[in-house]
Image 1 (spheres, one colour):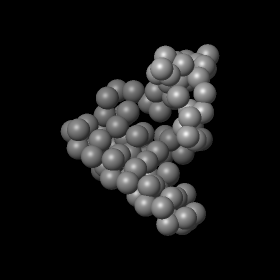
Image 2 (tube, one colour):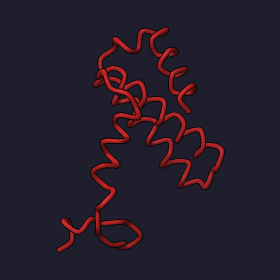
Image 3 (cartoon, rainbow, N blue to C red):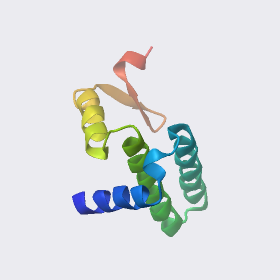
Length: 100
């Protein structure tokens, strides 16, 4: 996984994306997320696999643009959720602090 992430980062640097505007990169994240939603709606597993990969690529680049890396961001998020409690509501996990 390390080599793959480093390859994406190098690809982004080669294209100058590391110096691009992060808000524009966020638009790409949202665009690719929409493709994931479309793949789910169509039950298209190949498009879903591609879409999830594309979302990961766009997030790796967004992190790079902000002097972060995917592992740093994922570790930060996991530290927040690892002890989280809550329950499933209509198929969605809702954290305890959001339950009324």
